[in-house]
View 1 (cartoon, helix red, strand yellow):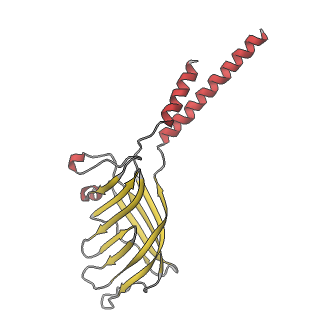
View 2: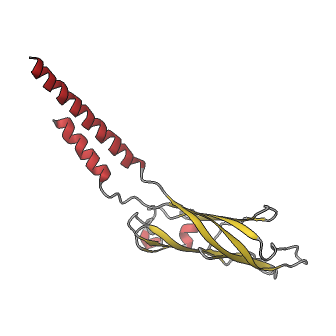
View 3: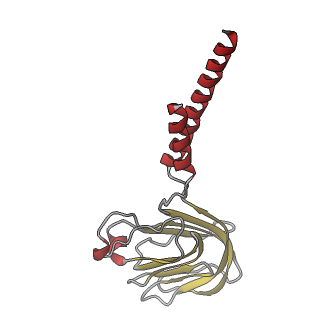
Length: 207
């Protein structure tokens, strides 16, 4: 009986709403180059206008580490609604990072911006990401991307290009392993208790 109660309690804990933090997001989609200004003098050439592109975005949100008073807000929970903003301090200290790649269909011009961004935010509605904005306005390279458009601006060079895109798949971090452990352990203990009870019942019938 005690084993059954313990097992049922573990199952209840695992089934309860988990306030796990959302720590990683990834987006994949397709787009097109809508403007392209090259600079032969500096050797900077953008893909041709109309060229199809494939875009992959990986966003690592902040962790709960650090003092919120110092600009380290905890990662959003899986029930979060609102805008989560990554501060420059978090990014420079490695708590948050962004990595995105734009590749042309023939992979002739693979563009991989540096992930040294100065600003970033992700919008959530009940933990579902609905939009994001990443930007790096440093010198010499400037990059920006949102869930609608992307652009490159090579500082002192007049070369710049960009376009539009639409994410076709979004993936987020999975539930915490501890939740699955509670669930498996709970059902295991419930099973043991049921088998013991069946065995006791059969023994009484045989007697």
